[in-house]
Length: 264
Picture 1 (cartoon, rainbow, N blue to C red):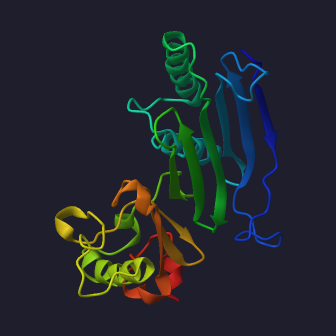
Picture 2 (tube, one colour; picture 1 turned 90 degrees about the vertical axis):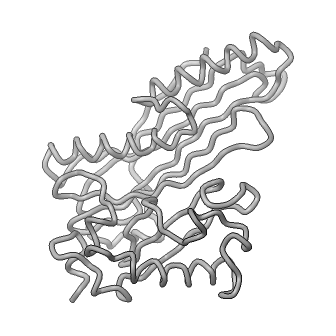
């Protein structure tokens, strides 16, 4: 087994977070890479499990108790999207489970030459005075016809360290106004005409009725939702990203929420 490496590096600036933007949390990107299995050099990545993880670790500008909760929830949300049936409690557990499965595979099938890959790339996309928003891409190939990939969007309350839900952001019964407007945006994005049902358009929402998921983040005064492959359509259809501008739904913003200031 090759030696693993663990390092911390400063985050790069992203288009959504230019150099001049004010910081409300300090953080570092923790990076963990390990290659397990024979990994013979005579054939690139032959019989090799490649495990790579990068994720943000909050280090300051918020109380220590909040930073600890933020770091706990960020890691938990990444692990919950790991394409593993028994969700691991840590990256170490995830790595060990994948390694055990891969070791069993190449033991049972010595001529198996496909590399397995598990990659996580996570970073803070947006910071505000009361919340941060994190985007995570998870890529996994453990055999089969194609790899699995997913995008996880999440916003976290800087007052508590907890993940933010739609029910915390919006008033009661917000669905009655938000869902129809979101469905129009969805149909425009997917080029589904009004007279065609969503099912006819290739999507399988419950009972054929459009709804939003909790895979979202607050970014630039918008709610950005992400529907991953297999979630509402076959893998071949691919993912769908949907942006709803909060300036269009000011009357739905709940008093005291982290976006309460957007009303003004």
